Image 1 (cartoon, rainbow, N blue to C red):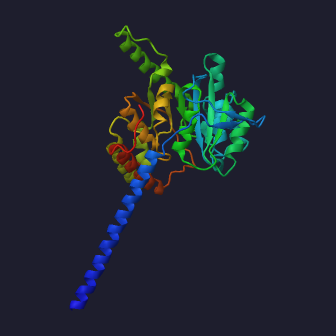
Image 2: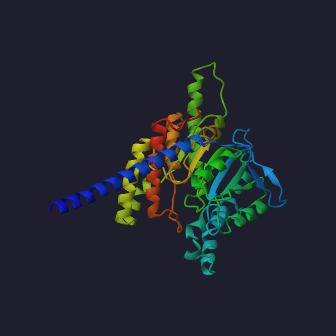
Image 3: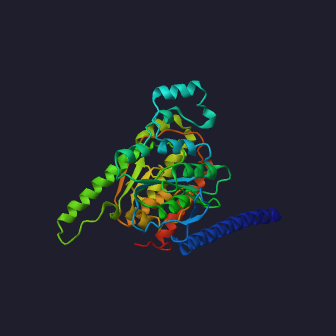
Length: 372
């Protein structure tokens, strides 16, 4: 009887000791990650080069701290997007404006297939950048494609477009290895030439024409800033790109539709994730994860020199930084459609939760310093 009691207690002690060791190991690992992300955080915006696809010579990338040379920069992160990227680029860049008849002909001729991840609305959406540039000579643009270590033909697709539209309008950054969407967008932002900087996904889930909604809100916020400065005669009026403003595209208005179509366990996970986001970054933005966001050049300078997360939850960190740096945030509903080929998996939720914990710990304990 006594030996059985000792054996039972020994197993309990071993189990308890194992749990304690695992917790200690996790905490040591976690705080080491936080420390490294705090101490190794450094952006050298002067050492990046891109390759001219025609001459094959290396050209130094500009810095976001240089004077703006374009009205708007569109930053597209791409990881293994050889199939979806051409569609998003064609919609963004092409001067051809398809009609419903064009789309119907494409369908009849076999130009559309679900396997190719081409959606019908893509063909009937408005072709944008070139038409706007032709109508308004002050509207100058560039598209910056950041290849985040793709293992398929994404870089070839991107360079083909750079050849077609010249490196003045399309530029490609090769990161070499996969760093994550947050890192790819940060590099694109830090080496863009626009007064306005728009991040958008390579799948074209949000139509590029919706940038006008975000642009209008930035202009409106800028006008309010000018009115407030008018009360202070000693203040000079800055250009709108010199006023830090952030606009966030949002799918929050589609939440009920999404709840109805998603599986029940995904709804539970997403609700739980939103609660954790609220506890981490606070209220203000209902949809932090929409990949359609616009910043003035001044806002990009402040935000993307401070960003630390490289993967899923950099969007949440952007909200946190905007609040800390007193950068106005405006959330605007945008059109959005589900595009096949999403890279978000169930395991991604765990990674997101880990990153949210990093934000709370890094900034909450003052380990991560914010440059004002």
